[in-house]
Length: 74
Image 1 (tube, one colour):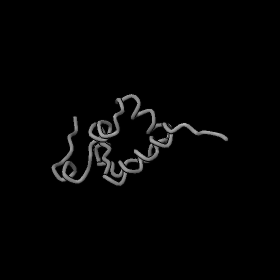
Image 2 (cartoon, one colour):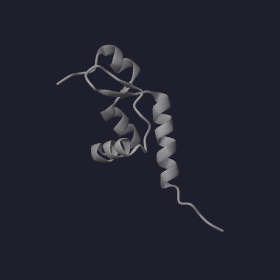
Image 3 (cartoon, helix red, strand yellow):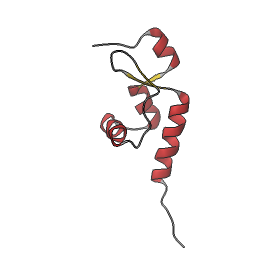
């Protein structure tokens, strides 16, 4: 199984680390990625491993928070 390089590990979050930061299960994370709810990964290496940076995490948190916040009508 392909593994991230040291450079990738220092620059980016792995998919597992990004899931943990967002508090999502593997299934929920992958479903939201597939549905386009979450942005595309910051970087995908030659083995197809997905990586995410801080800016991506901030965008993803904002998206998830907006979806969790109930909309109130007057």
